[in-house]
Length: 116
Length: 111
Image (tube, rainbow over all chains, first blue to last red; front, side):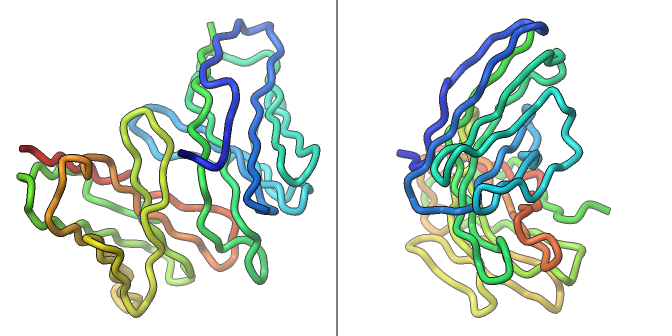
């Protein structure tokens, strides 16, 4: 059983819809991440939050908007997505090591997103 | 050249076999190393961290060779449940939050 929980498990939305993906962890981790994974490819980092502040944005289009309301929660707000945004969206969390990250990350089981 | 390279496989082995995967990384500033496994349509799961002295966890042994910039994973007495994709992961010293993934090695263990 994963200790990082993501909802919903599956999401189908039209290109004009607004929806949000949610992620929660209770491991006391202070770094949280969003990844995007396409079929047969490794995960690609999108955003990193450290101590509830956005520390990395990997040049992600503005139609993806992350939010970290507190140390346990991470959201990804979606608006006006494109069909090529269909993918598995993974949340992860980790401790923050000395000097920053450098810690193993624990993944949630993902939200499978389909854009019509 | 990719930052982390792995043989995509698949490695097709019988139950009980010993199988080894290698992974090479291009940046000598890499500082942390991990093996993850990922089942089809599931999330990556941390299998083990990799230390310079080598480390073992049950049937799994990981080795790191900094001089040659490669990491290995040895699986002994393969089980059917070991069938998965194994991802080699590296963290760079100047980008410590970012996991750099290899493309994965697929393992199939047959009865």
